[in-house]
Length: 339
Length: 289
Ligand SMILES: Cc1cc2nc3c(=O)[nH]c(=O)nc-3n(C[C@H](O)[C@H](O)[C@H](O)COP(=O)(O)OP(=O)(O)OC[C@H]3O[C@@H](n4cnc5c(N)ncnc54)[C@H](O)[C@@H]3O)c2cc1C
Ligand SMILES: Nc1ncnc2c1ncn2[C@@H]1O[C@H](COP(=O)(O)O)[C@@H](O)[C@H]1O
Image (cartoon, rainbow over all chains, first blue to last red; front, side, top):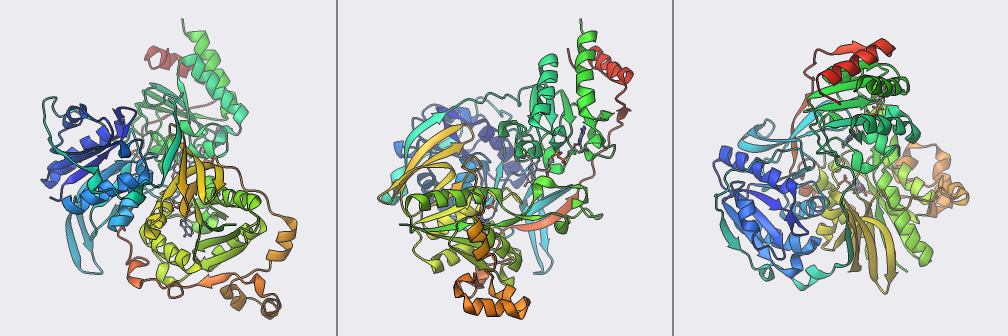
């Protein structure tokens, strides 16, 4: 009872990466809290996935294999998860900040009247004192995320309501297999026990899943453009440099919002988290929401015409000036010096 | 003919955070940021207006919870085609997290009554939580369709919607009533209509009327249709315990300024010699090439 539970996302025969990352985080939280790690897997034709999930150190795996649970629709998954959580009363529930997690999480939290924090960049265990009410709480989940606007990070807690829920984006946590031979206790759930006729009101008529063309997560060099790039045309400079040195192009949210490039290139708290060998930030000021997605880069170069841009503090090299001048020079001197 | 409610929020424009957006103590200077109609809520309004195009007589009510000033977006929505606006405002709402917000909104939706369709934005740009839509649907006990990009069909109280997912698209069907959240890839909202602008620019809430010059009151007595409905917590029969800070399970424990571990950075100029040196350095370190 009162364990840590991770909702595992299942799509096209596979469990999503973010679920494994959360299981790893969940394992370490469960160790600190001295409780068990549970996983919840809902879908169809799930046979064989028990082993894959167990490896991350899961103690109890709840599984419901039912054709009404795949492809994902909101109400059936909500019904099973809420029904289960009412019985098992987990103290913490984690899910991916994905199309599915962000559809399901708020629905579950509303049903159980529990708090939910979106897009956390870190999760820790700690104590909390409500000075006004004169109450002390031990071992709460610290849900840490950059907050609105600038260089601030907020720690959110849910003192009284359970479960404490959080969503986390893919790539933010690192996955780690505990043991290939670890075996979870598997509990098979009967979805029919939780589903009502009215949960099936939304029907899927058509579905097309695409694989993403952009592969930022696995690129060792990333050239990221910000609002300072100034236009869609200027973004071509970044593609040229990327093409020359073998890199992928990323962006800040301001650049995406301005329409300079596509949303799937966004790096940061609400985009992708990357850890490349080299990160070249072009015309990016470096607000915390952006930094959250790239701070683990091994080397950072900042190209900015403002000497005081916050991102310069993280940079190994700062090139001070206009990117329109600098990038063409980088391309030509790269070509000149490479054999 | 359908009865539609569109949820809209006035938000600080975080897309254009300028240098003066932060105060010296590291907190946000809200005053330096313009307050705007949350962008995806405009997409939501457009989806509703498309339904009205197809079914004239459809009634679109915009609902917002916020300070008195939030009436600005209600007028904005009316210029673009919404029929009416409701402002939910009360000190009791202060400090609401998404759960308390969705509870208050669901009470107001019940009070408006008989909605066939409720539209919301996918997320508000001040927090990017994307929670309020689904939570309102849960409080009302109705299904939800998130990330809508297009209304494919609406007939005989059955709606088909194309959803934009992270890695693909999906067309789903639901019976009404249903709550739909609009994705930024849905059509942009139509612009203001000049006639509507002339008509609704004088539409005001009671609070605005109280703080304005006397002739406002005269105009409103003459044109009752220009009143924007304003409700407080009691008007929507909400349970005070579930509102505001007290009704919010999430608490902010701490807000911290982040001081980046400043690296020893090397500063270069745009001079050819500097750039050539850097490229040679990167190549010799095998960082690139
Ligand atoms: C809830 C929430 C979530 C968010 N999530 C993300 C996220 O995931 N990712 C993200 O990136 N942001 C995110 N943001 C937005 C973030 O707060 C910043 O607004 C954004 O990162 C700023 O982008 P920018 O640095 O490109 O633009 P700006 O802050 O406008 O910076 C532009 C920079 O370009 C420089 N510049 C201008 N012209 C030139 C030139 N010719 N040559 C060289 N330099 C030039 C300027 O000096 C400046 O430093 C989020 C915000 C919120 C509220
Ligand atoms: N205070 C509010 N008043 C009206 N609608 C809101 C409010 N807060 C959120 N919403 C709606 O819920 C959506 C998601 O908001 P959020 O969960 O804050 O990202 C928004 O796009 C709005 O449509």
